[in-house]
Image (cartoon, rainbow, N blue to C red; front, side):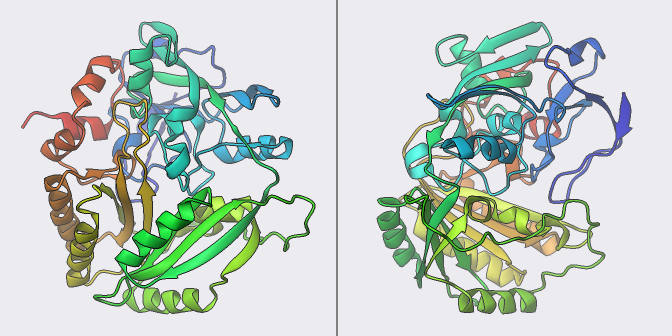
Length: 431
């Protein structure tokens, strides 16, 4: 075992140096190495403290093998440390892809299950957990497999269970067909929230992946572009060359904050000018926009917060407008704001984040003023019945979390008593 300082992807929160256990095989049992509490960790893409242990960290990136793949049925079995991007790179050439993908390929299968991730396809695919057929777990009392029909209660607790039901070692997943690695993309502008709702609903009827970039650089004005895409239906066509943007993984965090309000305003104007209504693009540039530049390094040594919430249908427009007013009044830079619609498709997970409504994600530089306004916004979201995404959170208090996630006590029941995280201790402590 070695000691290592771990931090969130945003750079706002970190652990003191903790002992780590590195798994290289699914046959290893980390619980035999220590009596301390454990927490599995993949590629460190979580924005908050759900990836920070209270005891020791179990590093699972060595569990990186695909066990088998049936290219007739689209069912694949892979170890928990396999990156989603690596898995799709293997399967897409055989006509299959994951139905749910996040904005980065740097997420492990185990992490995708533990956070029950969502993507641009929620209107037809729901969450990642809906496509998980079976999971292998190591618990402190032994090994167990679970599925919707076998140990179903533990399966439901593991989907979106924040890694607290044991160490996920492998999973069996259902993929969906795709005709090529190329995608047909349409960019549709909107000039108000009402127009966003109308146009995004229209696009979801004919496109598989829909997400909106929202421009908040002008106070009192909410505009943006809806990006709609689907896999290109004519693989014999000759699309434009793949855009080559290097993935910079290990550059140091900048000693200053690059994303100031004037720069954000300028970048927004440039983005509008280079907008292309239609194009053909490689799936990596469409599905994984966060991997095109070292986004988390641009906020300087303080890092950044992301507010990621889902708002109920009846309150969403007023809530988004009020949220933006709070941010404008605080005069903080707002370099990224993303809107997505969540359907009524239910996840099998006890603590799944999505519910029917509209999701908003806003990146904010880490400053005392930003933290204060985000805490105000989170309190408002809790009051109207919205939710904050645990995988992105660092600011929820226990009362707010327990109001948003009524099944938290059930997860506590199925939690392995040898598994814990800084997040779980923060949001389950008694008032």
